[in-house]
Amino acid sequence: MQPIRFVLVRTSHPGNIGSAARAIRTMGYTRLVLVAPHKYPHADATAMAAGADDVLDGIVVVPTLVDAIADCRLVLGCTARRRGVSLPEITPREAAAQAGEAAMAGEVAIVFGNERTGLENEELMRCHAAVHIPADPSYSSLNLAQAVQVLAYEMRLAQLQGQPSAVAAAKSDPAATAEQMEYFFGHLFQTLVDIDFHKGRSPVTIEQRLRKLFLHASLDQREVRILRGIFDDAQRMARIAKERS
Ligand code: SAH
Image 1 (cartoon, rainbow, N blue to C red):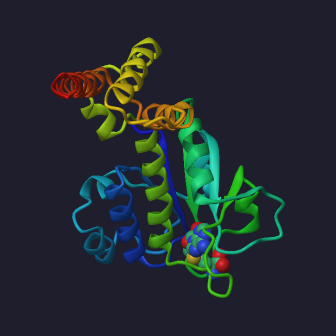
Image 2 (image 1 turned 30 degrees about the vertical axis):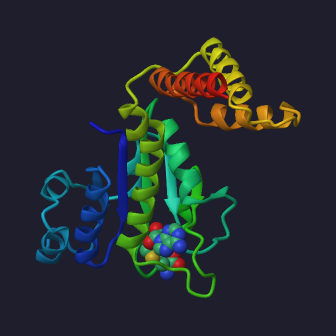
């Protein structure tokens, strides 16, 4: 089971529970805990969940926030505005990074307040940090399920970035070693001489630029072979041209 749960405290509108279920499900999360919901179960929740049935089926209902987070090692409380509570305030991105790290060692809860009143100060004081989505200060309160979506999206992004990207995974060849890159540069620079690229100018600056360019590209071994094949042909053509002239 995933060590991350989304906790909705005293939610008024059951439709928001369904929308939140859908929001977390689209981002790969399934665990929703309801603290003293005003109306649940409810047809509006089912309708707004739009088929995120595994989330609805797994919903846990508890009477207090303390029950919802008892076994958690990290608790992050989402607030639409600053409260008189001295808690570190972090962005959803920072929250996602912290949650991802804590989830490797234990349970994590992301907590959301009631639509009208938000989280009570006493509830916020049970959190390790307050997460604030940096919305327009003159209208900073998002719909509950949309706030859940922002947090779930950032958590998914952080998780995906921690994994090797699809592009990197498709690169099946091992990365070129430093030694292979030195042979590559030797070959490239000799080729530039052979095709008379420098025309009497100093090669130093262009060689530095090309080094930077190809090191940035982090070539794999197959790519090095392809490029060196091109250099071989360029050198061969230069030789033929020279013989003819
Ligand atoms: N008037 C309430 C608004 C609650 S909105 C208040 O001022 O707190 C319902 C819940 O959505 C909030 O308790 C919070 O958990 C979340 N939320 C809404 N806007 C948010 C924002 N800008 N940043 C973080 N969480 C937000």
